[in-house]
Length: 451
Image 1: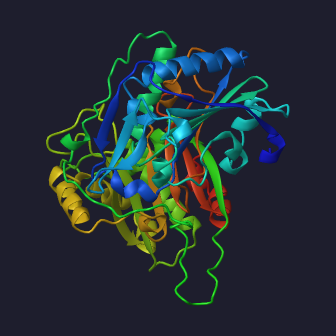
Image 2: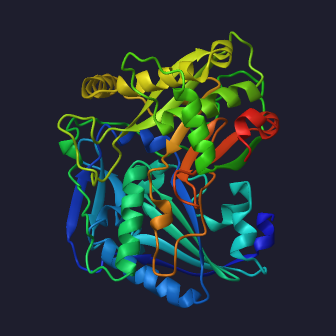
């Protein structure tokens, strides 16, 4: 269904702050956070069934005001201290009339067309769902002047669409779903947050890095003119699609990559490694690459248990790093799947506390703000995780009917993994790919595994 057919009407816009006064609080952004300032807000979209929109919104806003007492950083804004070091600033006294950012932005809207939850959950592309998620095309750096979390609650014929935009310079996926599950628990009657967020980012890294960044007048991720009058070629046409791998399909993929494991005590490949190499090999094939072309696999690794000392699972912020492995397309395709799985496994296992520390020191000596092109040539990049319990986010009216990513931070080869709604070991693969390659992948029986 085309987005224009939603006929969205904005009903109300408000800002929700922590229920209790907290005063003035500041928290320095650290090396794990800063590289994401030029990414876009991280968008999530959840669909719920229900027939009491007003009651659902009331409960959500009341629960939000309670959960923000612990997750108050999401009600703040980005700022800089006197030395130019970025930080999160929260102040009860910030006043919207003074141009300050006050709390979490909540927009209430209604789809005036006769649109049901089912109509939207079958949509392949988030391009058709853009109107349901705030802050499309908004850089994290704009958090200096915008809320760090924006939520849109859209009334549908038989339910509600919850579009969320999180400032990615402030938190990663683990922290995002920690917040969402805590908010849901409050709405279901929990008096307090059962697992309070660990807010001391400097315990993970305490190097102060000054960045001279200001909001761009144009998209910094677009090509810049260098006096050459030639126009940049138009970007490739991308398509998004969700491939739903059943529990049995996942088991087949994992068994296939482990069946020739040598009996020398080699570590078996994990479900993540098996599925990743399955995607990497078949996407490489669908791209019709030459045998000598390089292809890169990128994964954003959670470093909470890898840093020294380890950080708690409740660490609130970014504690991820992108790691890369590269090989020739012909070698990846001609070799058995355990070849690529071994490359991924070795890259992940090599990302020790020492490697993380060296990466941080290197970045701090010459800070580099990430751009999409940094993911690598002919890249397959995996974000999110099937370990995130996204279908447990129940605010009191049942599990979400569907969970999606928005269109921000997507490029050719970007993959988001989610647990399948059917539960068990099923996994949903949300993939963005150049349209011709996607068409070939859709016909690839070896990839589809009888989907």
